[in-house]
Length: 525
Image (cartoon, rainbow, N blue to C red; front, top):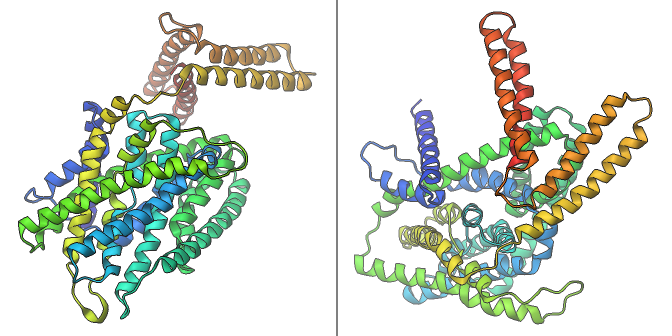
C-alpha cells in the first residue's frame, strides 16, 4: 500500500509540475528536474531509488516507440546522414574524449572504466530533445535531425557501455576501436532484424484486428515484446523498438481503422505525458542519494566536474562543424544536401541535453572492477548527474535565446498552407470522382450533401491562406455550430435528469456530439 501511495504521489507531483510549466511558460523538463531537486531534500517526502533496469526496459521502450510512431520516415531517410553522424559518430567520439580526459585526471583507473563513463554521458536524451525542440519552435529540419539522433544514439551508447564494462571487469581490461565497432555492428544489426520482424508480425496482427480496444492493447505490448526478444539474442533493444515504431507508424493508415488510430493516438499521448513527467521528476529526486556517499574533497569534485562538463559541451561542437561540412564533400547518389547555415549547427550543437538514460546507465555501472578492485563508482554517478542537470537546465533553458540569436529561418507557413490546400484540392477531386462513380441509385439529397461536404473541406484549406483579421466562413460555421451543440447537450441532460431517457441514451448522444465538437475544433484551429 505504501509503494502504491508513493507511485500515485510522484505521478501527481509530475502532473502538477507539467501543468505549472504550461501556466508560466517554462519548459516542463527543466521545471520538473528543478522541482525534483528541491523535493529530494524535503523532510518526509518519499525517497525513491531509480532502478536502471526499470528505466531501460520499462520506461524507455514505450517513449521511444511513440516517438518513432510520430516520426516521418521520408524525412528521417532524407536526413539520414546527419542523423548517423550525430547518433553514431558523435556518441563514440564523445565517449572516447571524455574517457581519455577522465583517465588523465584519474590515471590509476583502467581506461575501460573511464570509457564506460564516457559512454554514459555521451548520448543526448530522446525525451529531452523532443520536448525542448518542439516547445522552442525550431525549424522542421532541425527538429527532425534532433529527434532522429535521439532515437538512435541510445543504442550506440548502451552497446559501447556494454563493451567497456565487460573489458573493465575482465583481467585484461583492454578495449579497442575494433572491439567497439564489431559490437556496435552486431548489436545494431540484430536490433534492426528484430525490428523488421516486429513490423511484419505486429503489422499483420494490427491489420487483422477490428476492435479499437484490442488494437490499443496490442500497441502497448509491441515495444516491450521487441525489447525482450532483442535482449534474449543480445541485440540492441533500442534499435529494435525504433525500427518497429518507424515501420508501424509509416504504415499505420493501412493497418488500423480510423477508430483504432484515434484511440491509439489518444492513449499514447497520455502515456507519453505521464512517463515524460515521471522521468524528469525522478532524475531530480536522485540528488540526495547521489551526494550522500560522496567522500572526495569539495575542491577536487569541483575541478573534475567542471572538466567533464567542459569536455562534454565542447566535444559536440568540435565534432559537429567539421563533420557537417566535410560530409558534404562525400559523393552521394540522388539529391545532394544543401549547404547548411552556421546557425543550424550552432543550435544543434547547443541542443545536447542529457536525461534519464544517462542516469540509468550510470547506476548500471559495475560495483567493482576485475579481481574485485574498487573504483570511485559514486563519483562517476555524480559526474553523470551533474552533466544531466547542467545540460538540461543550462542548455535547455537558454536554447530559445540561442535560437533567436542566430536567427534561424523559420518554416514557411504560407508555403505549408499552400501545399496543403493544393493536395486537399486534389483529394477533393478524387472524392468527387468516386462519388460520381457510385452515385447511381442514391437519393439526390444525399448526393448534394456529400458534394457540399467536399466543397467545404476544400474551401477550408484555401481559407487558411487568408489573413486572420476577419472571421472566415468556416470559423463562423464553427462558432455557431458550437452554440447549437451546447444547446443540444443541455436538452439531453435535462431529459436524463427528469427521467425521460435512460443514462445509456445520454451517453450515446454525448458521444456523437463530442465527436462532432472535436472535429470542429480541429478544423477551426
